[in-house]
Image (cartoon, rainbow, N blue to C red; front, side, top):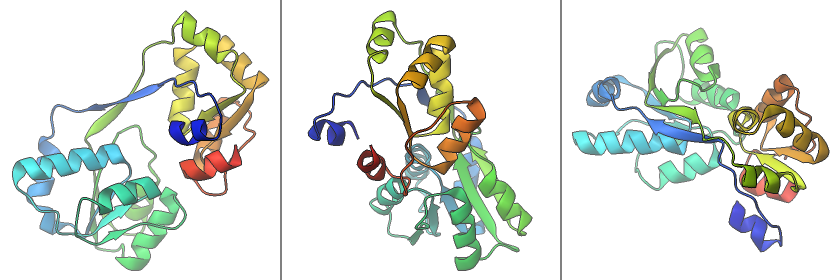
Length: 227
């Protein structure tokens, strides 16, 4: 995304607000992968989850020979390049759309899904599939941690930004933590705020942050075009 913005002449200030921490204890995932034939599909909601799953499967010598369902376009491309099993994803990159697709393509009642994820993630997939009669083994394989506080130099640079872009609601929440909140909110009030999709906008609304730009499709390319 940075490269694409710079190619269009923008100057990009990069500020990590969260970090992904892989959990040390993966015994629950290992047990599930050893019994992968019990599942009708594996649900992967992010590249981070995909990395953990493929790494553990490789370490165990296990083949993921069941369909894999993905939420986002980037996750779909990443997973598709690493497996020969059937990979499915909705055209609309939202958890709700994935639930509809799974129920239609693979079924829900009596089905069993493995869902490796971060515990901080949305509960939509788990709750909706269970409500339709499926069994969902939601296993925490990594967690989302808030990054280190922004330095005085970073804050001074951020105060000159024309637009703030957030690729998730969690990055926006963390932004209000790593930058003193009063300063952070003043920055967002002065500049334009862009988020990648409706889920991130809903989080912004809940945090009381005005959003100016939301692309029609929740991809980095669509967000850049909207910017």
